[in-house]
Length: 478
Image 1 (cartoon, helix red, strand yellow):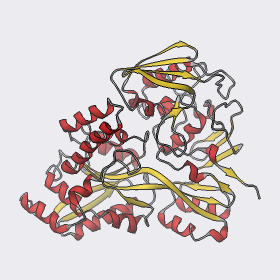
Image 2 (tube, rainbow, N blue to C red):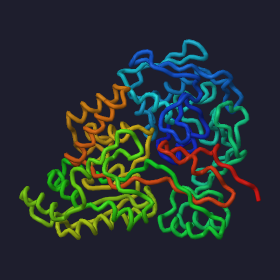
Image 3 (cartoon, rainbow, N blue to C red):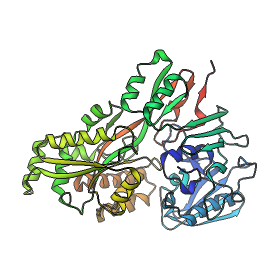
Image 4 (cartoon, one colour):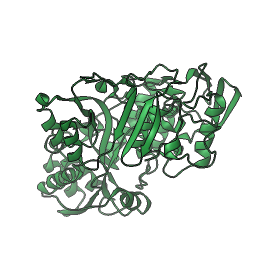
C-alpha cells in the first residue's frame, strides 16, 4: 500500500486516496461518467488539447491554496518519478501540461484519447501540493496532504488509518461522518468476528462467500448485508507461446468446458455472476462474445475440437494461482476449474500456487506460467480499461498475443468520442477474445459489505467506479 499517488496502483491504496485527494474530474456516486470535481469545467478544444478551469477557493487540508501549478506539478511529478508500483503508465498519452494562470490548466496529448476525462478521475491525477511534496521522491505515507473530504491524522501500515473531516474542503462531497477509522485484518474470520461483536461498523472486502452467507442470517444480531454494482472481474490467462496452450484448439476446448454458473454457485454462493467478456455487463459496449461463440459448457464439443486438431487426450495442463491476493476462496476456484476440466475426461490438471510478489514475476516478467488466474479492478469505468490492458500486443501480462485487427479497433475507439462507434469497436475486440482465446473471462462480482444497525449509505457508494466514498456513510448513535 501507498498513500502518495505516485506509488499506489492497488485497490486498498486507491480506496483511501480517493477520500484524501481531489481530482479535476471524478465519477459521482451512482454514475459512470466523469464530472468536474476540483475543476469548474473541462473540455477538449481540439482532439489533443484538454483544458480545465479550477473552482475558486480550493484549499489543501494544510490551508494552502490549490492552484493550476499544483495540478501541473502533480501530473509532471507522476511522469517524472515513474514509480514501478505506481499508475504512471495511465498517462502515456500526456505530452505536456501548461498552467497559464492560477485557475487554468491545459493538457497537451500526444494523440487523441477519448478516455482522458476518465483517466483524470483516477488517482494517477490526484492533486498534491507542490510546495510540500518532493518533485522526485515519494511523500511519507503518514504525512500525506490533499484537498479531499477527509484528512489523514494517523497511519500504521497494515493495521490502521485514522481520518477526520477536512475543515478546508469546499467541494460537493461534504463528510457526513466527522471521523473515520479503517482497520485491516489479516484473516477473514477475524473480520467476521469483529462485525459480529460490534468492534467495527462496516466489514468490506475479504469476507468469504461462506462468511457473507452466515452474516445474512444474523439480522437478530443487528447486522445486515448490503450490495451494489461492481466491476471486479476474474479470468484465466494463457501464454499463447507456450505448449500446450500455444495450440488454439487446446484453449478453445478449455473454454468449451468451463462452467461459469457452477463456479458462481458452488464457489461463490452466487455473490458473483458469470462473465462472457472481460467488459463487465454494467459498462456500455459489453458483449457476451464467449457465450455467442461457445454456448453452454459442452465436453462433447470440446472433445471434437481437440480431435479435429489431432490432439491426443488427456491434455496435461499446469495451472497456477495466487492463494491470498484475490481473497480467501481462490484455492476453491482453482479446485473447481480442475474438477471441471478433469471431469470432461479431456485434461489432466496439476495445480500450483505462489504468493503475489513471486507470482507476478513468474507470470509477467519471466513468462514461466502458461495457464493461470488473474483479476482486475477498474482504473476507471470505461470499456477501454477492460480491453486495452489485456488485448493490445500481449497486454500487461505479456502473454505473446497480438492481432492487428484488435489493435486497429482499439486505436479507433480511443480516438473517438462517439459512443456508438466506440461500442462497435469494443464488440470487435470482444469477438476476437472469443475467437482467439488468449484469455477466458470467468465472473464479475458485486460489491458487498456487512454493516451494523444504524449505519447507512454504504450501498450508495457501490457502483462501477469502485470507489468507497467515506463521505456518504453515516452512523446513528444508539
